[in-house]
Image 1 (cartoon, one colour):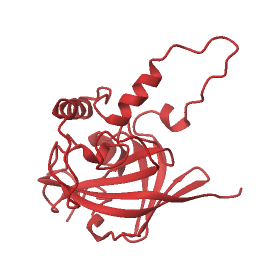
Image 2 (spheres, one colour):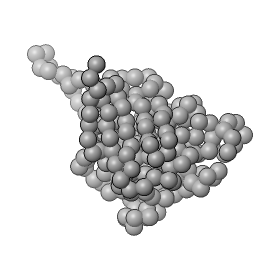
Image 3 (cartoon, one colour):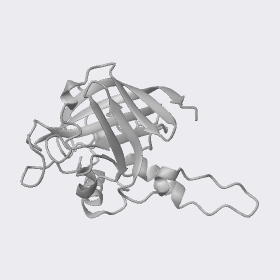
Image 4 (cartoon, helix red, strand yellow):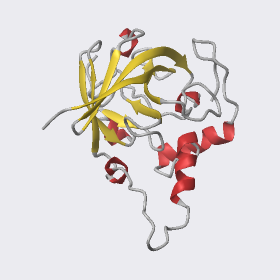
Length: 224
């Protein structure tokens, strides 16, 4: 389908409740769902996202005293919205795409967006990526072709993070379980490094969301 203006676009997630196709239980925290939806649409801090809540607690802790060692903030976290933070490659889909910070419409017109408040690539927790299915660059046009065990590679600088697909889900637009530190496990604490890819389904409609979840298998670093 041709991309561009005049076509129906897939809005960034407000996420609430329907079991995934794997039968996992829904999350009932609708107040947090609304907060996440407002934050994404209005450009406010995404404190409704489980991972963002933990990050906000760290951000608001008192400054380190003189003589103590401050924790370094990853470079990607300091970049402006819309900046490229990683490169995505998925052989099954024939996809090579830039991953940009944020999920605003201007960002998604340029490719894949990183959902605010979720883990950065290669970090513990859940790295959530959004992309259009049939409009603009339509990076996730063939997301439904993914199969269990397929590789998803995120490269940041000289480091490549290779994830393997574990599951696929179809959910309602307001279902926020895909944002959990362990995808589709409500109130979970991180138990590894995940990447979650989200787009609209069926093609040409924003009635549902198609979600692919993968877990980090190995990390490699390219020599200079």
